[in-house]
Length: 142
View 1 (cartoon, rainbow, N blue to C red):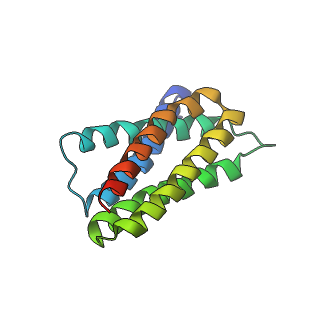
View 2 (view 1 turned 120 degrees about the vertical axis):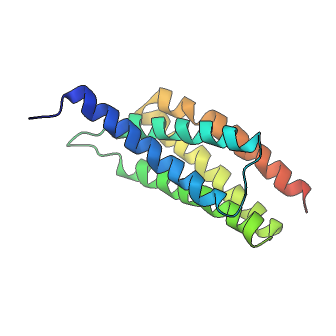
View 3 (view 1 turned 135 degrees about the vertical axis):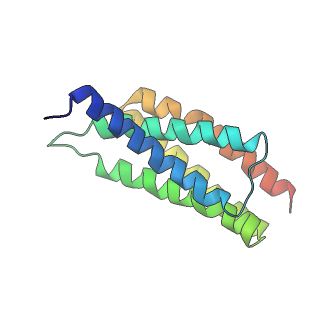
């Protein structure tokens, strides 16, 4: 019995969201999310998962968008690294440098995704704004 196409797409969406939420879980190991930060990051990781799904769906045999997806996973890795630098190692200066690189990577991903799927790019704008805010908070701790 074959799985209906709509159900396959739901599984793909859930998988994409789970990948992004996993990054949040890894980051939360060293930093207990507060009442504002936890729900905000949950929402942002969900938006990132939806974005990943939308771009993933735009793949064709001729164009896989591999470079854009690799950049997405690069920035997701940087996102996972920041709490370890800031909370785990207690290195706010190193964390500030890293979050600056992360913010630049997010902007590049938005730009790349804009060429592939504009709504997907828009979904990353709140994430970029939140990371800019977190960078400011990081800077304020120096």
